[in-house]
Image 1: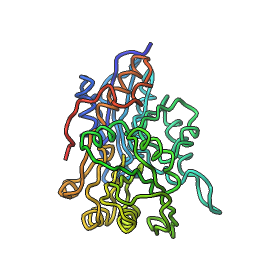
Image 2 (image 1 turned 90 degrees about the vertical axis):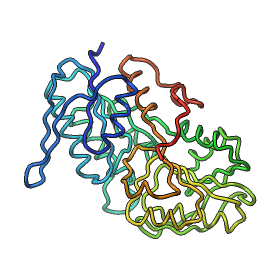
Image 3 (image 1 turned 135 degrees about the horizontal axis):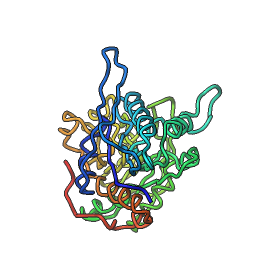
Length: 326
């Protein structure tokens, strides 16, 4: 059996780590994460972790490369400090959009990330809504893959929206949208989308009926918000009464906030898997839900060698009925 639980965090999303710490009733362990004058990252673990069950929380948020490097260095430091078991808790797994070789001379970035995390010292990974399900198989260590769907479902359920139509913005998200629509007892529609280039998309056709319905656009992440804004407009043009967007990871890079604010979306509901800047929080259409109880409960069960299966159920056993962060 593993020893005392130790919870560490990098600098990517300390607010979420503090919320998880509060849920667990376990204080954040001390680690120094700083930089040398040339920008090189310096890490030092400030507590004894020998024989401990160690969890390291780090999302791959902006700046992505810095966040990943911090995680790798912390894992290496903990491995060399004789941690009994080291779990990388990665609410948002970066470099997941290149998960296969679909063009000549391109990397499989998600596989490289998995190899780096394993070689750095992780014994297992806890993550949330991977961009593609097969990424779990890129790891040669156990992966606990959680979903934010129960948290999003509770929000939608309490908002009492009617005549719901769950829409997948692309073919890759159909399975996710179908499962969510089944939970809501809503209808399903799919968008046939052609991508002209990275962060560029054009809505081609809507498969299914959205006329008269309140559309819920469901995706794992919103980056520049181009796809979600265009899809919402297409749904309204096809007779939908309103359009809202739900996602797990609000990356919100580039012109995302301006596009959301100027779009026909009623609201965009996301989680705090990625930190939201103060400027972005001022967006009147953005609603942020906390996944700290979900991650905290998973960490607790992993530490106690219990099943995490019930965390996929709706309503989730940890749900407290709290209001959105914003």
